[in-house]
Length: 176
Image (cartoon, rainbow, N blue to C red):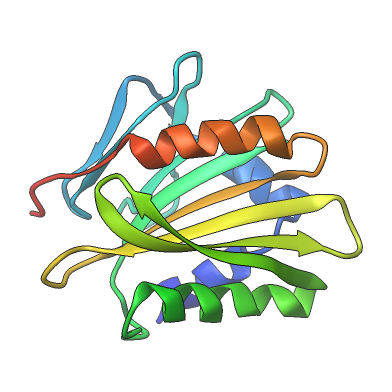
């Protein structure tokens, strides 16, 4: 339940959250997380950052600029809310943005690697922040996977292309 709360709190584009995502040990090439059963390729020219939080490592962040105005985060966690499908998971997770003056601009079907996924684009009324949220479930149970792009309107088109690269580079790995 703590992770769900942390995930909800993270669904804001505040600058402090972004700065935290841009710190940690560097990762290049491919980030592999056997505990959550996935890996993701780093886009050419970018390095990921391993989280420094206590507890199990859940995923990786990919800063898209030196000043961390744009960041991609990919992680796995249990489906502790027991969402029935990815559309419900995205709708409920994106709904938390409403408390931060967020508006769900669109909902869509997509893929996270080869997994079917659901997504949403969220725009914020009181800032230039925009984010994309994509959720997929591991087949036959296990972790759910979340990919998130947090950026600004000015950077969105360029950063969204990188986000699509990361989504395509997602792979399931043996879950240990």
